[in-house]
Image (cartoon, rainbow, N blue to C red; front, side, top):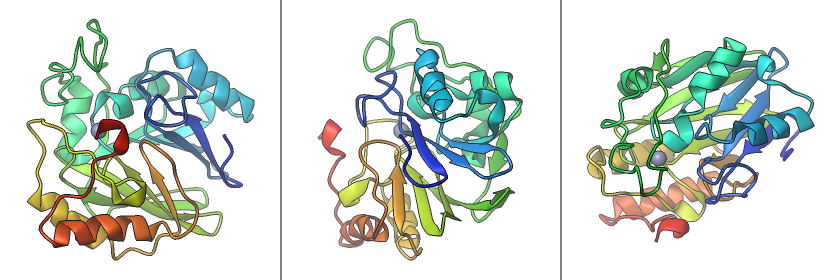
Length: 248
Ligand SMILES: [Zn+2]
C-alpha cells in the first residue's frame, strides 16, 4: 500500500489492514534514495506474502539497508533475522531490548507464555545476532531520511518511537506505544510499567507531528500529534488511556 511518495505499508495483519500473516504488525517501508528502511519486521511467518507486497512496489529484500525494531515483541521483531540474512541490513532496536532480540529470549519477550494462545504452539523466536542498540535521542541517517529515537518504556520494557521528516511530513512511527485516538495497549506482562509510560508520553506529546504511523490499526497523515497529546493528557490526569480497540 503506497501511502506517500516514499512510504509504503508492506505488511499488516488482523489488527490492521489484513494484508499479510495475521500476526504481522504494520510494517512500513521508507525509500530513502540510498536504500530502504523498514520500520518493524512482522512476525516472520508466511513471509512470501510480505515479499510479494514489497515486490509489487518495485523493491526486493536486497534493497533494505536498515530495519528499525520498535520493541522486542514477536509480531514486530521476529521477521528481522530472515530479512537481515537476505539483505545484510543493519538492525536497530532499543538498547534495553537488543540482547533479548539477539538471543531470541522467549521469556523476556513474553513469547513463552503466548505459545498456544496468541502465537502458534510451535513458534520459535529466531535469534538475530548483531542488533545495534539505540538510546534516547540517538539519530540514524540513511539517504534523505534522518530518524531520531525516543525511548518509551511502558507497553514493553522500553519501546522505541522514531521521529523524522519524510516527503516534507514530520512523521512519528510509534510501534505499540500509542495508536490513533490516543489508544494504548497495556497487557498483563512482566515488563509493563505505567508511571514511566506516562512520563515518556508527556515528552512525546511535545514533538511536532504531522503523520502518525502506529504498529497496529490505521495511520493518519495530518495532525498526528493530536493523538499523542490525547494519550498524554489522559495519563497526566492520573488515568490510563483507552485500550486499542482490538484488545478492549
Ligand atoms: Zn507489542
